[in-house]
Length: 272
Image (cartoon, rainbow, N blue to C red):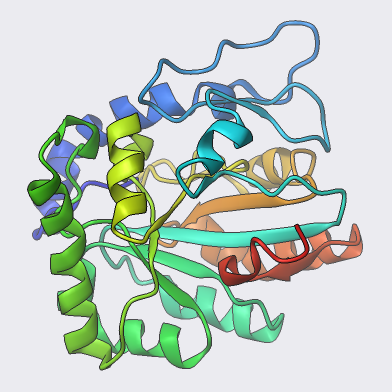
């Protein structure tokens, strides 16, 4: 979800590039809970959601059955009140430790989708994620638009280079969960990821939390994340978000009070 730039100042200068893509994929996200007036899902190749009823899964621009052919998921089809918590991070913004503290307090095992820059510059945080039982997923090494990569060798290199760096940092093999940068994908991408042994992980619950200088208030975040929660949701948050760091403990508590519990992505296919 975030373009990887080594220097933070440069990141701010090009942030609009990522935002343009995410705004398209987030058509349903920015529209709020909808009644009769629905928002069309995004064009093919950009992950899009249309939230039409509170407490129910959104309509996505690819069906669960279609995605499953490629070992890809955006939610679990279940009535069980279970959530799968995931975070994307293109860089460290000083909030991950607090997020990890909240996850530890609630005994939640999440997945952190990281890029090469993050692994290079924050090895201690990555090791903490692993030590505390979280999955570190593959968000590619350079965070390119993978839907524009047709050659399998180039596609594979983006994933394999991150795998190698993860092994160097942690001494462990990376678990094979892949999230397409900016939510951009193609059928060819999905097939190549499957051939490399990866599960592609999209999401069914998110909100606009990625603008560093325009962070939503607690009230704005809860207005989106409480009514839209639904059984089997794969939740996408950004660990670069100050708001997320400040509200995560309370947000997890509110979801628990609604009867939800949390599972790791490696439990996604259990009891199907």
